[in-house]
Structures are given as C-alpha cells and as structure tokens.
Length: 252
Ligand code: PGA
Image 1 (tube, rainbow, N blue to C red):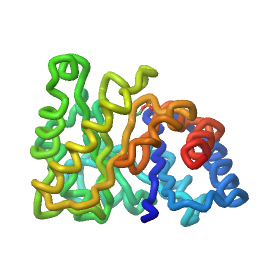
Image 2: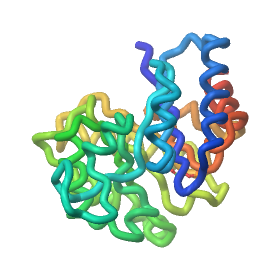
Image 3: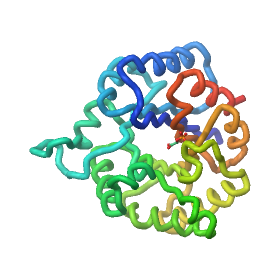
Image 4: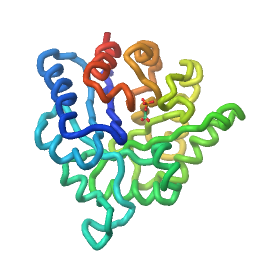
C-alpha cells in the first residue's frame, strides 16, 4: 500500500513577508517535478503570515497549519492577545501544532494541551500532536513511560482517530541539536507507540512522524524506519533548498 508521507515545516519564530518566496520555490518545484509519490507538504509559518501566504498559494500541493491556538473555547470575544481556532482556520490553517516541547516549556501543561486539542477538533483543524522525552528521561530509560503519559493525559479516546490526528515524536534532546536517535532507538519507540495507540485508542494505522534535526543527509537513513510516515522539520524547513532536498532524498 502506498502511504502518504508528510513533510511539515515548523517555522517557529522565523520569517517575514518576503519568506513567501521560499514557499513559492517549493511550490514551483512540485509543479515542475512530479515526484510521483503520495506526499503532503504543510507549512506552519508564524500566524501573522498565515493569511497572506495561504491566500497567495492556493493549491492542493501545499497546505497550511498554525503553531498554536488559544485555549479559550470561543470564536471571538474580549480576549486581548488571543487567536481563536476559528480565526486561525479562517486565516487558512487546516492543521495546528499542539504540545511542542518549546510551548510546553512556556505555557502548555497537560490540561491546556487537552483543551486545545478538543477546541481544534471542534473547529475542524487537524492536530499535529508533539511528544518527546528530555535527555535525563532518556538516560533513565523512561522515554516510553513519558510518551505514554503525554498521550494519555491529552488525547480523548472518544474524539481521536487516524484521520484527525498526527503524532510527531520529537525527542527534546534532538531538537535543534544536530543529534538524531539511531534507527534502533526509533524502531523501538515507533513499534511501541503503534501498539499503544491500538490498545488505548483503537487506532490501527496512526500517522506517526519523527522530528528533531531532520536534514537532507539523515533523511536517507530515517526513511528506512517503516512506521514513520513523515517528518516535522524546523531549521531545515526555512530555506526552500534544504526543504526540497529532504523531500527529494526521501523518495530517492
Ligand atoms: P529542528 O526542529 O528540525 O530544528 O530540530 C524540529 C521541531 O522542533 O519541530
């Protein structure tokens, strides 16, 4: 079976109005080169750029997501500084990143993550749910325990299915460090995650991504892990050249 491979660009706190050029170059590449494989390209720029980018690039080839939504369960209202799921959906987002370790550090606890996930689903935004252990948890052999806790405390069994949820495993010690786990380590993690999601959520074919220092070089190794359905890419997604190279090398 041909499964869809996801390449999600997490731009974090980077980009300006001229950065549309990077997305246009990716778009041009796909218009000209038919990589004849099932793939999904999603850009998650900062929310101030979302609306203009998604208006300029209207194509099935490229989709858009947001990096956050408000935990306030309202479309509009007197909430200074907040961007509701509805406002972001109307700005062109079809996906939302929730639970990223960089957000967990600032203001996303388990309860907030759960609330945001439910609000996102209500607004028909698909979830890119990030989970991952830190270095000391890894060293103590606690990775799987941590991941299972992150999943159980945030995902509601009644609402979650393989269509509205993408899980991105992002070991914190790998994000932005250039260090990527071995395929053995990842195999073990992904096999266990799949089993766990089947047991607890009755999801048979979950969409599982890897994130953390993905580059055009290491993607050729990472692609050998059969349970991985794609990547959440930070640094290497900012420039079209390195992002396109990742996709090319994956399908090589
Ligand atoms: P990185 O970031 O690719 O720069 O390591 C990944 C992420 O944080 O999503």
